[in-house]
Length: 139
Image 1: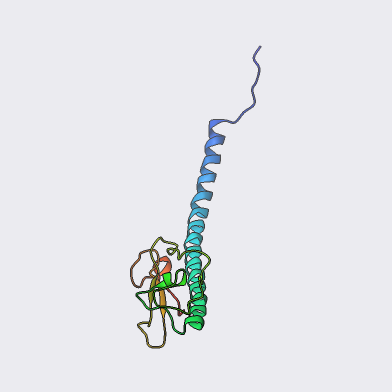
Image 2: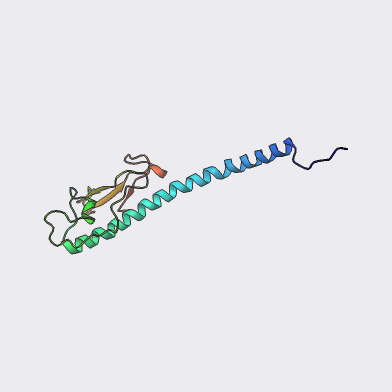
């Protein structure tokens, strides 16, 4: 006497695998594009927090840190800054979301900006589009 076992045929399993593959090929690119957007938003948020800390620094000291002093002046008192009341950031200055250092200049290259903070995006190069686009303190 033969007992009939219940289960799935190979054809049924292959159909399920193909359907899962089609769903993954549709959802995957959309998911990874969101990761790039979130890194850009993170860079904007970090630059905004540096901007606020720099304003507090300027109120206390009377000027923005020089380019040579850099953003580290928000964490540790630069030499000769007797009015420094920091630290102005709770944590050390992080790298941008792509692992590159933020660029800080004071005064900025444009006379309209007293300082500028720049992340060159994923590619680490000036210019670019999408995730490679620059994130700056003035836009």
